[in-house]
Length: 267
Image (cartoon, rainbow, N blue to C red; front, side):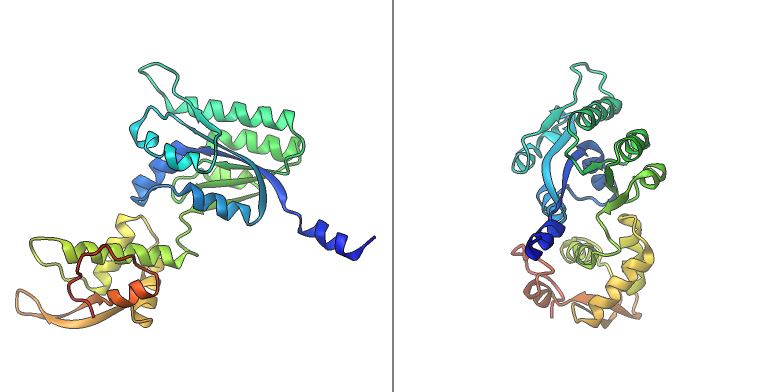
């Protein structure tokens, strides 16, 4: 056998089909992190390791919050499944049932798929994960929103990922920190004095993040010159050390996109 054919065979990506509970993704990110899904970035990440045959997206698109995302979703896939049952008494379970039906049908009709990737946090999917792994000998990956995924579900999968991955994606945590400083700079009314500990407390509590991760990220930003401390006199006459941002450097290094507004206390 030609040695080049051997390497070509080894480098071939596994085939995968993706099923997304868009309600879980959208609502989870909104409730926990106050951001919206980026399905294009999600697809690009999957394509690094898999040959994606199709991406199915399930939701009640009568809901205006989900409906406004349709344009972005259609840039990635045409397999968008409306799960509204036509009554005024819509229940989230309908989306789960429809997703399960699509997954089981695919498992029975197409043996060529190597991996099933399911984006959900619902423990109801544990049975289908076990079926795909144990009965169909398929790889099953789970994606879910950080802090909103059933442990039983992740334990049953071949692998799982949570989004956003705050522990490994430092730039994400940097962005949350900068968003907080941007808010402070443009907030009207009583002046806010952002100290190191107060900033860590606010970011970790508001975004439901591990305090140590935020503390590490903020320390790294200070070490690299994106954030610096300065002594100021507070309104009660006390001198305190507060944090400020070198916005020019953050913009230059791609950590922040300028919105055209001037930032106070910039270096």
